[in-house]
Amino acid sequence: MFENEYTLIMIKPDAVADGHTGSIIKRIEDEGFRVRAIKYVRLSKAQAKEFYKIHKERPFFNELTEFIASGHLVAACLERANAVEHWRKVIGATNPEEADEGTIRKLFARSKGENAVHGSDSVENAQIETDFFFSRMELVKE
Ligand code: UDP
Ligand code: MG
Image 1 (cartoon, helix red, strand yellow):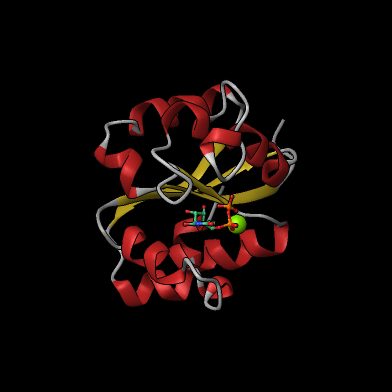
Image 2 (cartoon, rainbow, N blue to C red):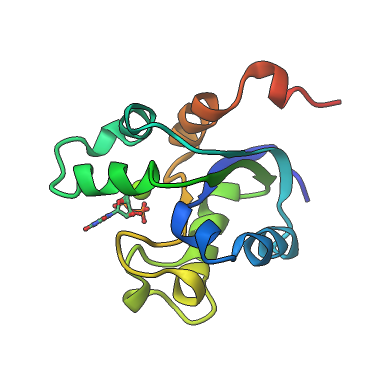
C-alpha cells in the first residue's frame, strides 16, 4: 500500500480549536495513510508568511497568514500510494460550501478561509512544505 509518495497536511487552527483533531487523525488512518512525522505547533506571523509565500500577491494573503498564526495547528507528513491526489480528494474543495458530502472540509470547515485542513497541491510542493516543518532527522525511517 505504501508506495513512497508523500504529502504535507495541516489541521488548521480552526479545526484544532473546534476539537476536530482526533476525528481528522482517525480519517487519515481510515484512508490508508501512514503518518511519517507529526507536530503540534503555533507558527509566528513570519513563519506563516514563509509557508504561504506562493500566495503573497493574493488579496487574502494577510487574512490567511493572520489566521494560520492565530493558534496551534497540527502539521504532518503522510505516506500513501497517490498521497497528494488522494488527500486532496478527501479534503474537498477550498470553499466548504462547494465541497462534496463527506469530505473533511464539508464536515469541519468554518468558511472558505478557515477551512480546517491544508493539503499539498503537487509532489514537488509536498517536498518543499515537508522541508519547512520537518528536519531530515525527523523523517528518517527504518
Ligand atoms: N483562502 C482564502 N480565501 C480565498 C482562497 C483561499 O482565505 O479566496 C485561503 C484558504 O485557507 C485556502 C488557502 O488560502 O486553503 C490557500 O488557498 P488555495 O487556493 O491554495 O486553496 P487550497 O489549496 O488550500 O484548497
Ligand atoms: Mg493550495
